[in-house]
Length: 154
Image (cartoon, rainbow, N blue to C red; front, side, top):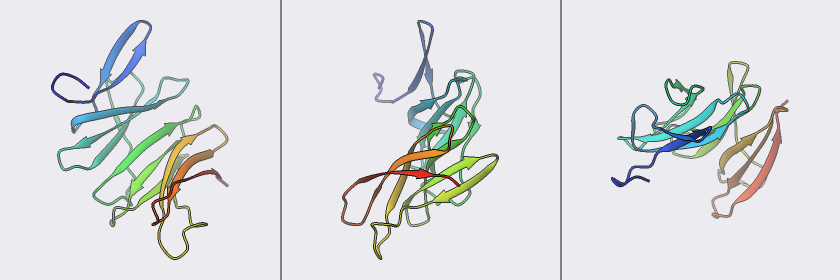
């Protein structure tokens, strides 16, 4: 956080720090992940209070949008970029409920944990991803507890 209260992402290259600020962010950017090729997943919050997510592979010189079309107005949060270029994250539906999403070979695959939720919906968050398309994350039923999961993409 800087002296104005704004939060910036950053990347360390050699001995130099470079701040990262996603396009459209209103004082909040988080750099969440980086893969071995230097592709960084970053997200921010815009002036409407929605999440905006991007990848950058050149230390913040250019940004490529990451947004799931099924997201409601709250938006999409990028979490992990694998070494194979796959991405996972969380999108929020029209009711504001978090759901996981995997981007693989140019297509989005939404998912939601349902095992422990009974009849009430779970909020699902995808936090990590490896080259074998194993996703780790967490979900919260309506009782507010939080549980971890590992999912294997087919």
